[in-house]
Amino acid sequence: MDLELSEDEAALQEGLRSFLDGRFDMATVRAQADGLDRGRWTELAETGVFGLRLPESEGGVGLGMTEAVLAFEELGRSLVPGPVLASHLAAGLVDGAADGTAAVGLVERPASVLLIEHLDALDALLAVDDEGIWAVDRDDLVVEPVARPLDVLTPLHRVAELPQGERLAGPEAAARWRQEGAVLTAAALLGMAARTTELAVAYAGQ
Image (cartoon, rainbow, N blue to C red; front, side):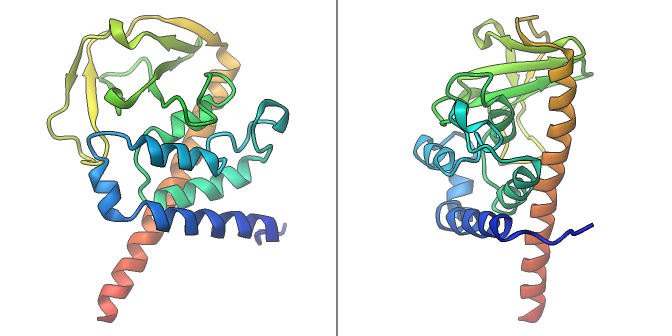
């Protein structure tokens, strides 16, 4: 089995890293902790990140999971803020998710505590459960902000009860989202760990 990146995969990784280094430095990331910079969100969408696995016939890039993993590793490396994972998963299901005109949030149920990330920045909110994927009207929610989230770059709201919502897809799609979401989250965490190691090595060298 050949585990080396192809030329196209390496180019994707290098190109996205260059783009992110130029637009998501730490000062910019910290400034977006309480909101979403729609200009940079649109620029991010223009790289094809959200529609990366969406077929070209549907306005996407038409690539696969390998390329998505590489992309999310770079997104994690730069701590790109906002509901990136949910918007990527929702491309093709929610209008505007792929082109960045809609920021999509995602919450899984059942859960002992229902937490919604980046609520104030969302244009659409989806819930995933064993029965499928549901569009939830955020105007129906009674929420409470979490004063001190563990990740200061990810604002959280706690909701006591989540309406059932309108089903957009069935159990198979929900199971796929859970699996793909776990893989892409792991890729982002790998990127964070790699960048942390680079900074630690550079610091030790000084």
